Image: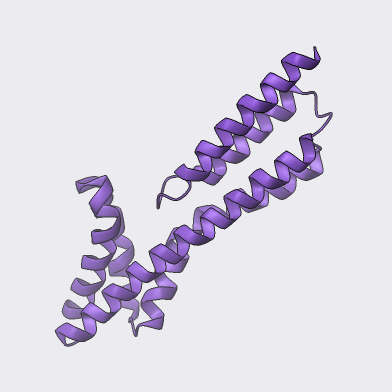
Amino acid sequence: MGSVSNIIKIITIVILGAEVLISLLPIVPGIPIIYVTMLIYAIIDGFQQITPLFLVIMLFIAIFSFFIDNIVAWIGAKKYGGSRAGLWGAFFGGVIGVFINPLFGLLLGPFIGAIAAELIFSHRQFFDAVKVGIGTIVGIFGGCILKLLLSVFMVIAFITQVY
């Protein structure tokens, strides 16, 4: 049974490594998928190496990760002078952008949404609105970095639990 257990560990770690890369994509729930992978491993292993407390801590991280994309885009827009309308424009632009073109819409949607909302609802000058749009992009990249750090932390914590 030991060699089967090692094979399961190796397969799980490879899957977790791939999920770390997936977590870099905005809106894609890479961190919750990492959590589910850990949960499945714990069930298969009979909770011998992964404890329920460990899973609860990882669950809180996974839940927090759902909010990262929106929170950091909003913070980025706000730091660059965004109004409430600009923040909502970035949010709705991101949602609409994903449906139009998932890859480019993820970045361009919040950017264009923030600019449009600043121009239309806040009556900002064009260059001020573009500055807010840039802030949303900075926020999105910041969120990607934060999600990367969280996912790497989760995988390292998992590896230390099973070895």
